[in-house]
Each structure stands twice: as C-alpha cells, then as structure tokens.
View 1 (cartoon, rainbow, N blue to C red):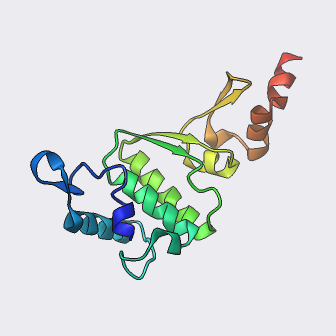
View 2: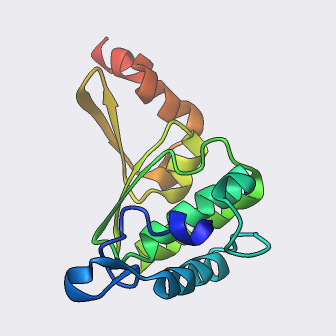
Length: 160
C-alpha cells in the first residue's frame, strides 16, 4: 500500500517509527503522513491502501516528490523530476519545486528538458565534456541557445 511506500528510506524516523530507538514501524504515523502527502501534493488515489503500481506515473511521481519535500530537506537534488509524466502532473510538481525554492530550499535541478531548466532555475550552469562552459540567466536565454551550449556548438562558436 501507499503508506508503506511512503515510509521507504524513512522507516527509522518519525512519524514512521516508534518505540525504543525507533525500532518499531508506526503504521498509524505512516498512514497519517501518507494522507498528508496525498492531500498537499494532489496525489489522486481512492485511498492510501492502494498499491503504488496502481497509480498513474504522474501520481507516483507526485507521491515521491511530496515524500521528499515533506521530509524537511536542507537541499533538494531533483534529477529529471518530470520525465515521462503528463502535463498536469508536471505543472503540479513544478509549482511544488518553485514553492520550496521560494521558501529558501537550496535546489539542484538536473534535466535535459530545456523548458524545465528555464522555468525552474535561478541560474543555469551548463557542462559540456566534463567542464562548465556557461553560467546563464534563465530569464535571458532561449531553449535554442541553451541547447547550443548543451551540445557544445555555442562553445565551439566562441572559440573561433
């Protein structure tokens, strides 16, 4: 069920664990935390007893992003956070990442989706062949120009 999936990686921490040294799995705490994730991140499921594989890809991703953001991280490393999901789920995840970033969460976004990079970044750092080749303002770069840096063509143009 979803409430077990939501505990993965956090099963020894509150609210998923209880008792001496947090040795016992807290089903009640896990169910409550999972319900909170589903409500705050609009995970569309009939209930939290449903198996995670029964959810759409977008809802699975929202559950995962919600679990991580509600764990109170100091840094969020998001690698391709919306790859392969529907536009509605993508927009919801983008809004959650933007909100967390606006609230002071340091965020490292790794993505090949140019619109995602431009839409979610304060600064874009482009690497090509293991070296940083550009530091760009997302407000002043087009997807085409960004793609040029990512493929090395803009770097080659600067050298000639």
